[in-house]
Length: 160
Length: 151
Image (tube, rainbow over the protein chains, first blue to last red):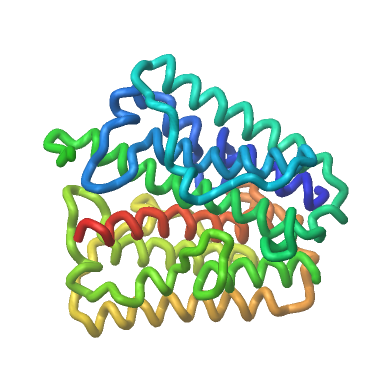
């Protein structure tokens, strides 16, 4: 399997399943309601914020893959439009799945040589580092989503 | 740079280097005392149990790549920590460092002909077992960072 196909496989797996870790975003979010997704526990980000944040960087990298400049700022990566209904929540999820699939499709079509080029600017490292970074970032926040969900499902959850 | 060297760098960065994620395993764990590592929050695994689970899967996957057939245990390597002394916590952290050393040593070998080999029990390639550990570490690191905030 070519390296770009291998990386695209990991992008799909963290979102839709099939990975060695046996945990993916879509399955873990399938039964989360919009109320649960927007409920804060302890001082943690809500599930909705974590999903938005993970997708924010996928969206940013997609723009670069489409030939646009990198336009991502950490400080905006947790600020999402209000989610006040199941429809709002579904909209965020649908965008997350659509962006993930587009991201995987674009990566698998890249010539391998593209992976060694600077990603937007030399200071960010090459495409390989950034694409792998996004995959691991999504795993990192999936772990948090799973933990927040477990807390929410406790009978005596500490809600703040 | 070969893919083996790139993997080695990813492992190195995640452990105690400069990963894209900006959070490393050792930076996160270094200031957690045994009492906090062993503290149970609700019915979740403690930080200590998660670290043991990470070590066990690192060791298991490395052995699988080297050709051993090892079943996945029913408890998924989540076990009660009986000795919660500071000394025992330092031993756990040393064990984690040793797992990293073993991983990096293996990835320093020039031979990568095993990448595409399939581990028969789960049908994943050996390469997937390595990427799997990186992703598994990232997943649990995210949880440790949250648990650390509330203990």
